Structures are given as structure tokens and as C-alpha cells.
Image 1 (tube, rainbow, N blue to C red):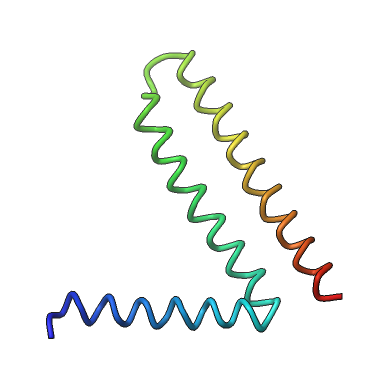
Image 2 (image 1 turned 135 degrees about the vertical axis):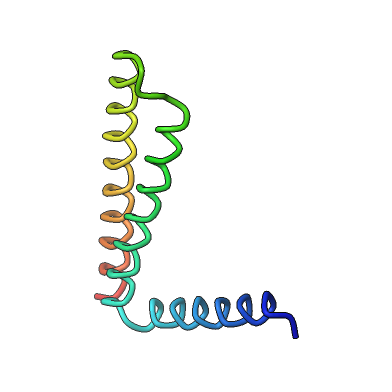
Length: 90
């Protein structure tokens, strides 16, 4: 087998086990959502830096605005998802 295929199979097994852990254990879901939210925000911040360079004040303000909006959206999304999933468990 190709080493690329081995890596993909290992990754898919790990992700399926994480998904199963998230389904059966709420603390695994909470930790996973927080980690996934941080990774998404870091990636979105990198895209914002590529779109708006650091040269102009207007771009700095837009970068700040988009960072605040994206972070607020992610926090609200994770909070609502956790709240709904905990209400279902009760």
C-alpha cells in the first residue's frame, strides 16, 4: 500500500473514533468543539490577513472588525450547540 493511503486510513479511523467518542461522551464533545473552534478561528484569521494587508488603517479596522465578528460567531455557535446538546441529554 501507498504511504499516502495508510495515512488517510489512519486519519479516518481516528476521526471516526473521535466522532463516536463525541456521540457517547459529552465531555469529549465539549473539548473537541473548543479545539475545532480555535483551529477554525486561526484559519479564518490567516485568510483575513491574506485578504487585507497590514498597510492601510482602513484595512486594519476591517481586519479587527472581521476578527471580532468571526470570534463572536464561533463562540455563539459553540455555546448554542453545547446548550442544545446538554438539554437533549437531560
